[in-house]
Length: 372
Ligand code: F6R
Ligand code: MG
Ligand code: MG
Image (spheres, helix red, strand yellow):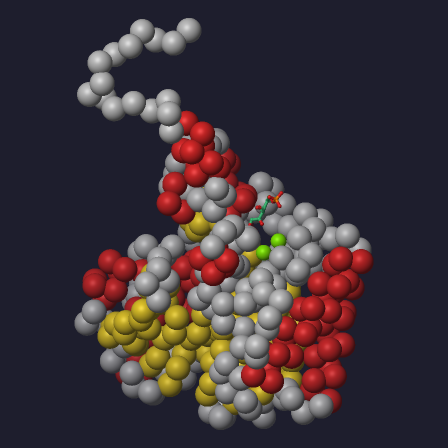
């Protein structure tokens, strides 16, 4: 049994919130090499999407393991120190607590972890997104594991006929439920169609009795009780041999569906699938980006990555995303471009309500002359 962990944090942006500085990536890579040398990790890669740095690691400590989480926290302290020295933007933004106690839950960094026994050939895809939220994985996960119009295997492969079970979190009330698909499909869509609150946390194959997908599900805004930046999510999906094929896992991203995030974490915008070189959201701090790093895992070691969206087959999704961005941007501060009030992450409305409280009057009060 090995564990694949992606642990990520925004520890400072270069320039603004648009990318990670190469010095930070180099420091993370050196730390990961050290941890492999010390036998804490079997293997590791560093990657980034926008201003978030991701540590992609294999090890034998299981999920939520103290030595691995402590190590990641230390790496993020180091990258924060570099960000501070270079005066990068929002240095240490996601490290919410000074009192780290061995587990990253509620501490700011996001993580997706998946434990599995390596198959004879083990293809996995690590997805990293920036300028959006964990519920952004709901739509593609539904398509990959429950929609035969996306995943031909659900119809054609006998190992997939029984379907998949989805574990869904309610982020507001901190509870979870399992949906057995296809039987519970319509019930599940009622929930996961509201991705700011209900988020798919994991997916399991019923036939193989194996976990197939894992996402990061923290919501920083709720953790911190105030806006500290969108909790840009990561996701791990295993592919092939009774699970969706690599092409079925990637297919949902050929449509640049709308997600919440983008400028000030407060807008709807299309998610744009890009190669690593283009994972630098700039226009209106967006559009939100997703990268897909494909690996084969052999004896716990990574063969790869392959930069799977650096492919002309996704050019059309990119140009559609640019067109959707033009369309939404023209709404300016109006919904549905701007998020509804309850999902806005800045507190202007709260301040305004306090300031204007005396000027609002009930429609039942007799009309006074309009103030001049
Ligand atoms: C979105 C994001 C950015 C910032 C924006 C304003 O997740 O991080 O869009 O919200 O650049 O940043 P501040 O308020 O720091 O000037
Ligand atoms: Mg940032
Ligand atoms: Mg980010």
